[in-house]
Image (cartoon, rainbow, N blue to C red):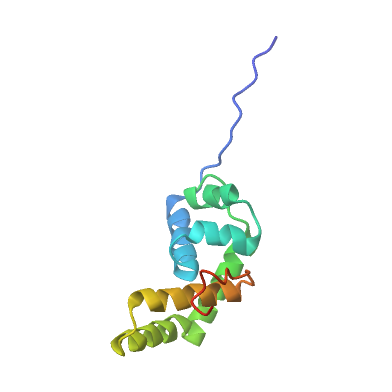
Length: 123
């Protein structure tokens, strides 16, 4: 019986490209970006983890989608606006816990998730 060559599971991807992808993902989706990316583009978490680790190539459409969102974030100033609004609320005396609770409920609402009224800030 002839010996089979070893199966190659991962292609070599340039580390600079992997790092650029990681920076793009985090700049758009923030901390926990790999899990958020999986949800955003509709792939398994494991697939997004492989992309982030540089074990498999990232489809061009995923990179283009993230780049488009990065551009819109810059153009709209959403991050700065949100940061300014939360800082103003906290200067006015709102607790960081209250601000975080409101942000969490708003995020769930944006994603269309049902809000547990027993745990919601706005219940």
